[in-house]
Image (cartoon, rainbow, N blue to C red; front, side, top):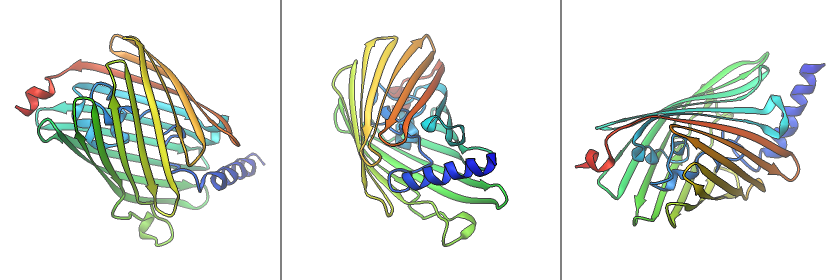
Length: 281
């Protein structure tokens, strides 16, 4: 009976969300990836939104993000990220998991990015995607992502991100495939304390979605973030506290029909490496 109830929960949630968002992204998709179109506010999770932002990370970094969608254990989402800067470009490892034992989706990705001078960053990522359904077996698909970010000025940054442009299919099935998603983003760093970002996103066979967010740094140790996603009518907000090389963020999003989704993010910056200017000289 418990298994049947869990499957009913999933079916209803999928129906409500099918026209509003990609399940392989967090509900508050803009929260962990907010700093992608910036320089001063970029962090280990930024390359999930655009791989090119990976080129601007100067620290060996790791992060964990998790959310309990609409307060349901069966709809939990977890995201891991790890960044290794090198003189020849930066590497990122990303992993995500959504669901529970009867139904779950997971992804493992390897990314690479570098700066082409001081004005252009490029990045690419390859993913291994799996779906597991109890009683039906597993399916897998290979996908790719790519992004470019242009630093139009010290404060204004713009970019384009393509997710799955080659149309990866699960087990080469014509019916089950990953959607093609393309995104155009813009970020403005008004000051060292205030940053605002927005992106227009179009997923295959879905309406256009607009993600917008802002970040304000009250102190060097305290930041606040807030934003919205138009397609799912979701608003989100959160507070981050930094302690030396460690940062913890408590976040929450709200959907008018499905309710609250709490989230928690941990970021670790292990050590500093050479500056970006030194890399590009």
